[in-house]
Image (tube, rainbow over all chains, first blue to last red; front, side):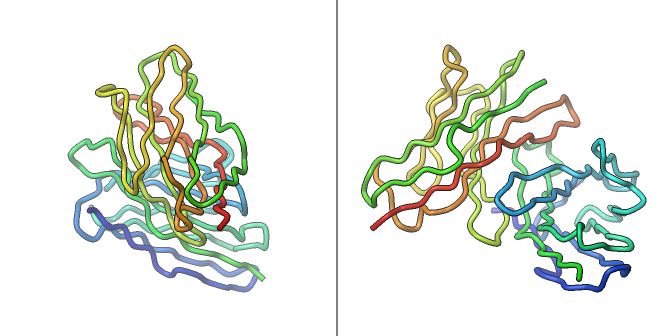
Length: 116
Length: 114
């Protein structure tokens, strides 16, 4: 089946620094990628939807200047957490949808971000 | 707006017992419904999906779910629980048109006791 990878799988950074998380679709082209945030023991909250070659669409309440999303190619999307603070510590999961209009979203393994 | 509600944040069963995880949906149009499983510190894996075809949907790992319009439900079942089934399970509904997205329930943690 379709595989989505994320890198890094975990990252620890100091407050005020920026962190970039990569999401790749390994064996398919993804015109649409999604970024989710998950707090401990809670559900996934959609942060933004990104389409290849265009600006991301952010959900209400998500700061677009803080969470920069770039979907530069059909197989790569990046999420950059700028000027990270401890409250940004979370599990970030990306998801990709195939370009054929499939109903299926494939999820990455997630990235655990800890901001000290 | 379309949404799903998962009843019970935690379900505990004995190994070999029936697994029943509940999900009710709210939708003004025929919904597309999904069940995902998440193991600790991992992403989500699709178990099964309902896309308005057969109402009884069979998924991976012996799971199945039945779409019941009259009850607005899409409960997940497995006849005999295995220790490896212990995980978090999420019900989701597809919302939006051509630019659709998934809206998830709050999740149900399944524990399997030996």
